[in-house]
Image 1 (cartoon, rainbow, N blue to C red):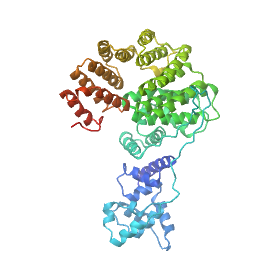
Image 2 (cartoon, helix red, strand yellow):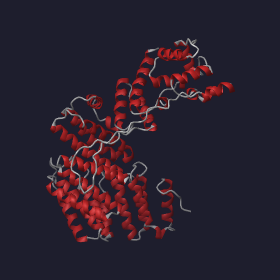
Image 3 (cartoon, rainbow, N blue to C red):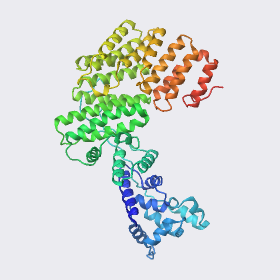
Image 4 (tube, rainbow, N blue to C red):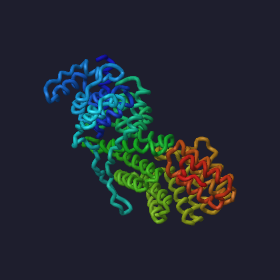
Amino acid sequence: MSGEGVHVLLECRRRSEALRAMGYTFDQIADLFSVCYDVSRLRLYRYAYGLTAAEAAARYNDLDPAGTAALRESRLYEFEHWPQRGMRPTARTIALFAHVYRTTARRLVSDRVYASYSVRDRDLIDRTDHRSSHSAQRPSAAPVAISGHVTMGQEVEAARPAVPVPGFKDCAALLRALTAEEADVKRRDLLFELALALGGAPALALLRHLSPPEKDRLATAIRSSTRVDAATVELIEKLTARCRRLDDEFGPAKVLPVVEGQRALVADLLHRESLLPGLRDRLIRAYAELSQLAGWLHHDLLDHPGARRRYQEGLTAAHQIRDATLIAYLHTCLAAMARYEGRTGSSLDHIYAAQGWARQSPSTLLRSVHAIDLARVLAANGNVRDSEHALTRSRQLVEHPRTEADPSYLYWWTPSGVQRHATYCMLAWGRPDEAIDSAQRALSPAAISPLMRGETLLIYADALTQKREIPAATDKIRQAARITVRHSSGRLADTIRQTRTRLEPWATNKHVRTLDEELASLGITSVRPA
């Protein structure tokens, strides 16, 4: 075998072992390898098993029931090269290889090769099936609790999430990306291992920000059961912070598997006996932060039961280390989600629970975030005076200089963010003119994220609808709709549909009809209006 062939075989062997550990079958692995390797089905299966030609030939010879097989390596290569060159294997040969690779004979030949056999031979190929009835199933991780305080009278276990197993398409995308972007075989294998552990191809965007020593350290943490040191915990914290930025770039659909993968990794580290107390607290904080982020991503994908589960798991961990800032933030997130769902009582419960913890927090920025969400909850409930007071307080607090007490996960909170939320409050207060002015100011900063821009545009559109400025309202909805092309927020698409519903009295207006056509073309609405 050539040097290049050895490298390919070793690379396939390592990748196959990683995929098998995640529950993939040899059939699935062979299908995945077909994405990167333009070889016959017979060779793909040898790659999937990680066998040399000599090993495959030996297994073949051992399985011949007549004891007469004498397959040589050179002849195996000829079979594997067919039909480009070499020799076509007989149907009996294909049937024996199906036994070697524990699959169906039909999977070992392409349509072109299958068509070249006689009817009798095709019947033998069709009937030969050596798939085991005891094939490995994908693992499902049993929940492992992180003991802690449970809040709001709800028994929620801080469970270790099932490790997210990338699907076939994601693994195929990962293989294609690594083949195209990374020439060094060792680095390619390392990235493949890390990306699989962190949710698949989207994790490459996270891993590119790590230095080679950091990648090696992360791989050691994934593979090893040795003591976790401070540098490893610092790396986890760095990845956790970077995960938040990924949502701004890619949206929740791509980022959620990465966050869940990292969350699973942190949970594994926490269940090791050799963690020092200080490092354990830092990892518990990372677990709580990742749970909060996972909850937000589930909410943005309109999976509210999944979001509540993750938020509550984050609360359990945050209570364990008595992190008042994070506890207050998680209750604020739960309040915001309950308000979105229209669950008024739950929204008030969580926002006032957050208020108590916010008072204990040293973070002025956190208190500003809580105050603005309190203003929104109160505005939605018609309490204008208290809502105005909370909004004013949020504006005052956000102007304070940031300190070390302000957590990095509030990087996104700025005076323009207060302005954006003020737009919602003003509209809820019944002041559309003030809401329009506020929306214009909130949209002026160039650094606003796509999702925040889309949400502000839709509040702007609602204010314009109340003013019966229909052409302008449809234009704002259209701008928000175009953001969904590059951002996977289900909540944004859902809000677009709700905002369009409020235009129903003007459904026959030409601007609304044009908007309907564009929403249908973008897949936001399922049926194009007649």
